Amino acid sequence: MRNEGLGSWPTRRARMSPRSTALIFQGRASSYAEFAVRTTKLADQLRKSGVAAGDRVAYLGPNHPAFVETMFAAHLLGAIFVPLNFRLTAPEIDYLLDDSGATALIYGGQCADVVRALSGAAQLRRVVALESPAPGEAEYERWLAEGAEAPIDVPVSPDDVALILYTSGTTGRPKGAMLTHANVIWNTYNLLIGVDVSGDEVTLIAAPLFHVAALGQTLLPTFIKGGCSLLTSSWDVDSCFDLIERHRVTLLFGVTTMLAALARSPRWESADLSSLRGLLSGGAAIPASLIHAYQRRGLVFCQGYGLTETAPGATLLEAGESVRKAGSAGVPVFFGEVRVVRADATDAAAGEPGEVLVKGPNVTPGYWRNPEATAAALTDGGWFHTGDVAKFDDEGHLYIVDRVKDMFISGGENVYPAEVENVIFGHPAVAEVAVIGVPDEKWGEAGKAFVICRPGTGLNRHELREFLLPRLAKYKIPVHVQVVDDLPRTASGKIQKAALRRMSE
Image (tube, rainbow, N blue to C red):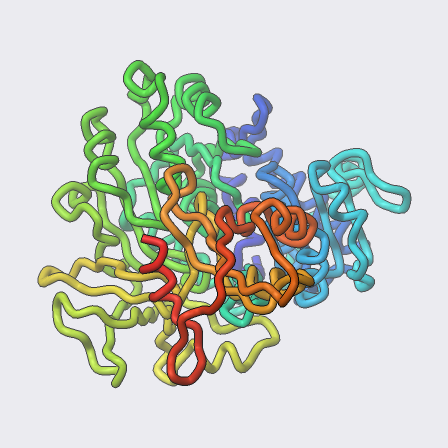
């Protein structure tokens, strides 16, 4: 088999455990043998549409077996998979399709209005809908069924790019972080070393797969071990409890807001959680009180820290340390290195905050068609500059102090203020704006916009929200708006975000 990347996994897994269940979605199960056939047929159809090695194949929609099939089919051809955030608006998706140069798009019915509102993406040669296709589009199941089952063996190197995952940057424009097959595979090894994933695993995947955490920390480790991935298209507390009980779920990943919602539910004390062997969490530190709530139910977390650019695992706090080191992001993964450095690039002492640098076979080679961003993020020694501030304790456990520059996390979604500010600037009443994240009981953090209005104009939260709804995903829209006469600045004129945070306390 000349394919040394992810595209070979369905065939390799099917020959080892053909009758084992690979995926369950909305009550329908598919075996590894069935999955391998479907992936091959889909790859054949993509190939007939002109998709070749190095081309980009995009997917837009909530969790669905088609997401997994499209990813592996693209990798079977040596193509690059581009999963898109289905919460984005048409202008945002337009930019990502144009920047990636995607030649094929498969999308879910929930995204039909967005797809039909696209103004660009002229390079798309094939658009496929999971249901109710528009004129000129193909319907997924019929189109897949027409593919051939003959084996496809395209040469793919571990160093070939497998994924482009878009992460917004401080410039306000998303950057496409490239992950090679080797990056993703080494991350899988790191996860399997730190977490005891078994061949009989039943993994509930409710977090969106377009995020690298759900993809890299749950789906792929479960798949390579021959376990079962239980997919849900959305997050719902009651549905989560139902699925855990009905399918005897053994492994669950969630961001803090998801796990906290479970613990707040009236069903928490009586729900049958006896099947759960493992809980994974990332995206934000878990409060000690929440850790103790799960511990009282006999459950513990494996917390971690990472980024899209690290595929994502950089550190992991194994279950045995989850109480003693509550609040820590753990220690560096087995195949990886982490440093905390001062401004002069020397290593910070224990307890001293500094920037987090990450190095290892899971670290991105750079950003898609963005050599400037790549050069800024990666040093000559291969160390990735995260922009996060953290400190090590005297036992080598990492504690995150601050997020990537001004980025904040709202309901598990990364929000980058510069991107939001750029869109708000388009409002005719706005002269200047600064956005920060503030604590929020429901979402963990939510956006707050400080706005200086143009003379003779005004702006309130409702007016700004109406302006932003067609332009930004809902989770990016500030919950709070404060009109101000001026903004705190440094001597060079740069807005002081720290001062705004103090004003909001």
